Amino acid sequence: MSTRKQTKKYSYNSGSSGLSKPKKSLGQNFLNDQKVVQDIVLCADLSPSDAVIEIGPGRGAMTGKLAERAGLVIAVEIDRDLIPGIEELANAYGNIIPLHADILDLDIEKDIVEKYVLPRGLSRVKVCANLPYYITTPIIMKFLEECPQLIDDMVIMVQKEVAERMTAAPGGKDYGAMTVTVNYFTEPRIAFIVPPRCFIPQPSVDSAVVRLKMRKEPPFELDDRDFFFKVVKAAFSQRRKTLANALGNSANLSATSQQVAETLVAMGINPMARGETLSGQQFAALANRLLSV
Ligand code: SAM
Image 1 (cartoon, rainbow, N blue to C red):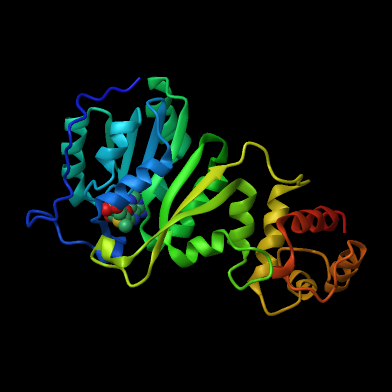
Image 2: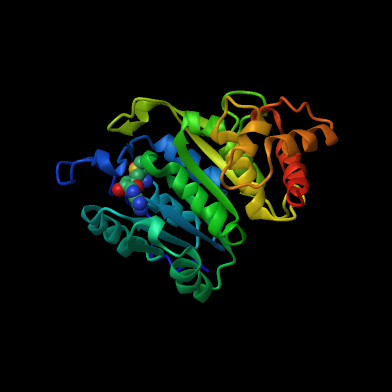
């Protein structure tokens, strides 16, 4: 399946003087630790029938290693200065497609899957990335909301605190709209923690590699998915308020605080409860009931 020309070791991640200076504005903290690269690639569990979308290949620290195991790597990089290096890797491996683009502007299905993946007969699409931290959440949300059915698995490096938010249990300060959303679409797991010394330049906080295994079936039934996410968003937009007040005051929902409180009582939930105490399943049941209020 693979079109690679060669698999010999080839790296453009030299950190040598010919490379452009890392751009802070683009979240450029380049990986500089081969063991971490290897562990990320192993975590992605790749085979020659997989296509990998690598967001922000940068200086290519992971790109060649991904190409050695997957059938195809689509490497989407926003920084024009880094494209020649990715093109060099593409020439060496034969199964890397460099795309100079902002990942947030791409239509994943039309611009990537239909154009590059399907014509090569590849069956699975995975996302693998050391994400630029300034747009971590928009990138994750884009893949989850725009095309969850197209993606099999996401293995991504994020700030440790973001990883903790994705995997938090109800009741704590880390639990929020992102937790509920990520857990609706995926089964998230923190694979390992990566300290600042593994990057050039070093970030100020720890990072974590997270594996988001996309769910084949939703974890609970929703009568209206958009409405569910409106309820979840409203519940956490004013964390210090009770759930009844947060939802009752939301401009995006029509139920009053009184109606929300009555619905909670009917569900056996304390009407003074805050959003952070409800599980995803309870949010689903609440949203399904509020639809007809
Ligand atoms: N993968 C490389 C590594 O691990 O060394 C680089 C990771 S660095 C944290 C993030 C990369 O994402 C940078 O190369 C940056 O230029 C790129 N990037 C930033 N914003 C982007 C966007 N909107 N679309 C695509 N790439 C982006």
